[in-house]
Image 1 (cartoon, helix red, strand yellow):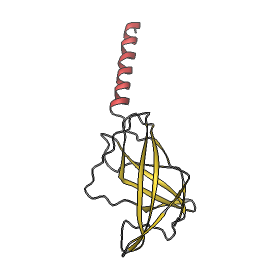
Image 2 (cartoon, rainbow, N blue to C red):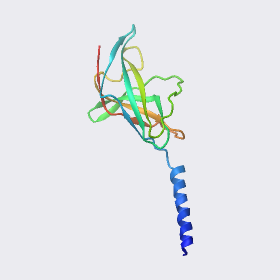
Image 3 (tube, one colour):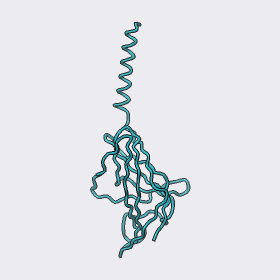
Image 4 (tube, rainbow, N blue to C red):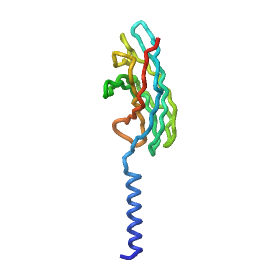
Length: 165
């Protein structure tokens, strides 16, 4: 084969490879989610229920190649029991629309979540553990344009939750 023909074939393969890897590759949601190591709850009471509440500052660094949007309604808190994690809290969201601006690739965004949960009585969302104090993590739901199916979540670092007054 001639050098020119080799060059044309190599160029065609390079373009085909680039097109397939960029256009048809699946969207991967990658991020680093960091929360403080220790948080303390406040206790609230009403006539029907006892509540806990705490503020969860969250730092999200988008390490994907596409913009990501944080979804409060798709996120949740998990508790560690031995080596396993299980859901202990998810927010109630009624016909909510996500209002966070997209996080550009390489950008870090600070968001603040207020977690309120019933620990006794008739109220919700309920705290799904018999104890408040323990080791937890945030499962942060992150949306990407063009992504369909289950909303991907990224686990934060573990944090200690202490029951306050």
